[in-house]
Amino acid sequence: MNSAANAPSSPKTAPPSGIPGIPEMLPDYSLRARNSFGFEVLAKQAYSITHADQICAVIEDIEAAGLPWRVLGDGSNVILPPLLPGVTLLMDIAGQAITQQDASGAVVSVGAGVNWHDFVIWTLDQSLPGLENLALIPGTVGAAPIQNIGAYGVEVGEYIQSIEAYDCHLKTLVEMPASDCAFAYRNSIFKAHPNRYIITRVHFYLPAAWTPRLRYADLAAAFASDHVPTAEEVMVAVCKIRNRKLPDPKLIGNAGSFFQNPVVEQSQYLRLLEQFPELVSYPEGNEHEGKRKLAAGWMIDRCGFKGLRAGAVGVYQHQALVLVNHGGGTADAVLALAKTIQDNVQDTFGVPLLLEPICY
Image (cartoon, rainbow, N blue to C red; front, side, top):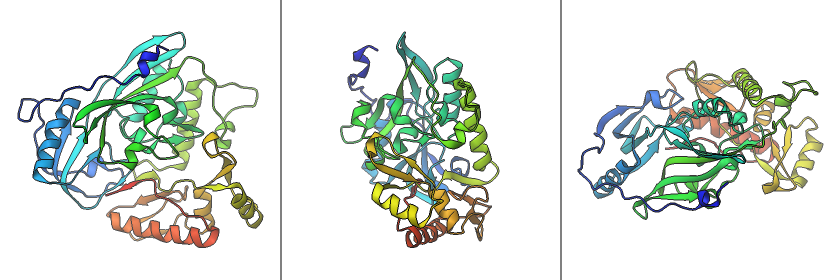
């Protein structure tokens, strides 16, 4: 791969306020279709961002008015209140293309508003494997780096070469190499500083050398021991597992995994294993050498919450890691249930559970 591909690009100049192309303000805009819990939510003001150069003028106007703001993609990893004050920027930047390719791999550039699962399918259609373990994760490409989404032993940060974003401090578009993004388990610089960077485009590097990653038991069990699956077969298996365990947000509101799998010291893991011999856990990678990742869903189930219903919200009957909206639920109701679960897991296992969704 050409080393120049990793170098930050020159800042791009955004247009001044008031020129044609600045998006129209949408008052009292319904976000019911843009949050996977299906909550009734109104954005006081909303703008559909379809091009990175629109952001500068919109942010200038927002800051001049002293209004709070946030960016929303598909709303698959957020908990929204009934009314969002200030301004909501709807990330709708589209487009994806292979921008560089040689014998070692390919660089792919993707708009932040592109649906994540559609993008994974597209990469495989282009014979570019690597992201198949992350199939069927809801949300947009631009949201994926914020949480550093991961599944079945793969994190998206492993394949990100650089990220284009609007830097609200520098007032310009910048390109950040992956090394500057502070990717960690379900974390990044974008999550740590939510109102500094607005991700507009993600550049992935997908190496040509590929082997299936089947470390997780559910995924390994999908294949015979003597069969080396293709990337397409891995994706199909991942989709089947996720469909078996996780509810479709179109049918029942949810944000996927609601809690992070906690990472603990080996000594704490061994103490817990002595008390709970059936404890489900996984070895952690290089970042947490000598630590173990505990299955939060197993602990929640062990505390008796799987299938529990608390009014309009509840815990999914097939996967205790997922909280659901049966219809008519609210952010407050979901968060109250989550707090009850956190308290019980802490009391039982001495392990804190952190929320995966972002709460507004």
